[in-house]
Structure formats: structure tokens, C-alpha cells
Image 1 (cartoon, rainbow, N blue to C red):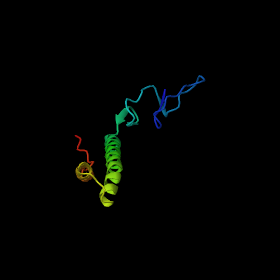
Image 2 (tube, rainbow, N blue to C red; image 1 turned 90 degrees about the vertical axis):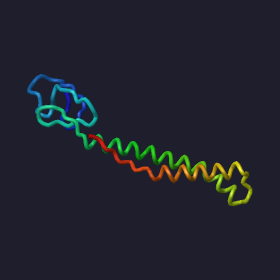
Image 3 (cartoon, one colour; image 1 turned 45 degrees about the horizontal axis):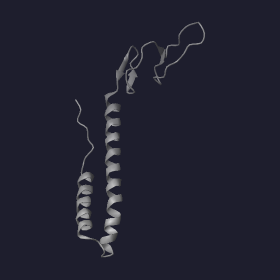
Image 4 (cartoon, rainbow, N blue to C red; image 1 turned 180 degrees about the horizontal axis):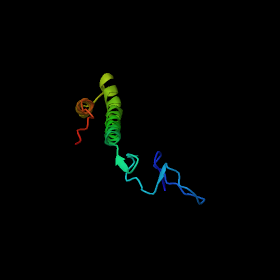
Length: 109
């Protein structure tokens, strides 16, 4: 049996009438909602979850770039950067700008 509100599996421990909020039908995804007769996918919740996942990836990429940029920028600021460090700094800064420009908008049909 499955709870139609929480989607959790429930074990009935005694005989009797099955509560109305339970069904023998299993949800097929974490975004299923009970419509009174069957599970239907909440597409908006799925889209939101996917967007949040993509935004998390974007934020991790920005964090990684910032972590790489910091010591390179220190070397430039202290006027002790090698030519290779200067090139890497510019490359990382361009990467960070481009990642930051990514819009995490999903267009799903």
C-alpha cells in the first residue's frame, strides 16, 4: 500500500477497512501526485527540481573557477605572476563570466 499524500510505502498490520488515503498503486516518480484515482506526474515540480539541479551545477562551476582565480590574482597583484599564470588567470576569468551568463531556464514540452 502507498500513502497518497507522502508517496511512502505503508504496511497494514491488522485486518479491516483500508483507509481512503492508501492505494495499492505505486507512484512511478518522486513527482507523482494522487488525483483521487491514479498517480499523475507533477510536471511543474519536475521542472523546478531540474532547474535547481542545473543551478547547483552552475554554482559549483563558479565556485571552482573562483578557487582557481584567487591565487593567480594574488600573483598578479603582487607583481610576481609568470606569463603562464597571467594567461591562466585571463582564461579562468573568461570562463567564470561565461558560466555566470548561463540562464538555468528549462524549456520542456
